[in-house]
Image (tube, rainbow over all chains, first blue to last red; front, side, top):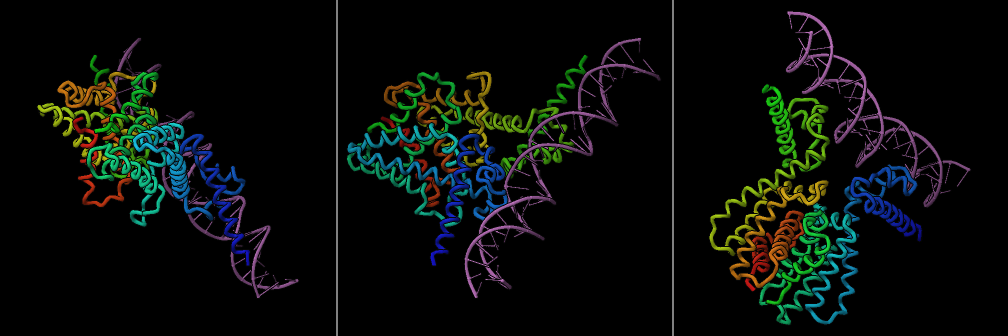
Length: 199
Length: 199
DNA sequence: TATTTTACTGAACAATGTTGACAAAATGAT
DNA sequence: ATCATTTTGTCAACATTGTTCAGTAAAATA
């Protein structure tokens, strides 16, 4: 009785195709460019079909949001090999900003979606939370190594994350455009270093 | 020939009425709640009339965005009387976060609008930039007083602003909801203090 | 093969932003 | 005051949007 399973697989494939099409449209032209009809055209089905696989457009965007966090999480794993705690945290910050700037629309979506935690309360297994936990681990090794002065891990991690997210957000939204292009990179780097500095 | 002036005034009044109606709709139900037809109904004119006073909906939202910065700027003035530099900066941060959390939709709009600097290059007189300059002044007094270790004013100001904006954004978007409600306030406060700490 | 279940279509609906042809009102000139 | 012109406002229309639902074709089951 492998029919049931094949159907499951087919449905999964369909969901993937829809999400892939939606993502392509999104990175190309932002939220307004993602249209049920355009998705339908891309996958060569009628618009109504999409509603057999997703509740509505919001649902689709939410899945894209999750995909963003998954990608961020995947790249975080590559930091494991850096031994020095502070250097690892620093590299993590650099990567975080690079990710945000290379995928501005996606990053925007990842933090624009309010419903991400909806229902299910503080979902321990959600990708965003897992990403934060990993980041917090790096912070903990720094604290244990005495690189920062005493303080709660979570609080310190939040402070650093907020700085990174703030920088990413301000950069993406062009709020730092008053800074000359050529010095922007250095300023941002130093700004994060300012938060990261040993104390 | 005061007719010309009266007409200017009338047009200004009309623009104000439209913006007021739009703002009411916005704070009540966010972007999707602001509709040309709803604005028109509120001011008791036909939808087409709005286009005599604003280019399009984006234009209206941009003006609301500016209004947000003006309000933030106005409140910043009340900090002047705090003598101690660090305390002033600290109070400024507290106020910034309070403003963001009391006007979450408005704050969102203030930083969601990409077109804010469009054209006119780095517009020295724009409200957002003025708000930053004022903030940077406070940072400068702290630096001059030797409260922070040496560093460029602009860079330090950006680091602190990024932290504040990051915290505000994460809070508004519910990204810190995994923290128990009762400890949230303290964590956020300490997180900012972490960035602000004398070093 | 006949029947039931599933997958899909495509037309329809209400709502959106925006435009442009027309009417009304205010202003200017004779 | 009367006529012409410019400014203001209305209304219907258009193209698109997300979403639904009565039908239909295809596939699975009996």
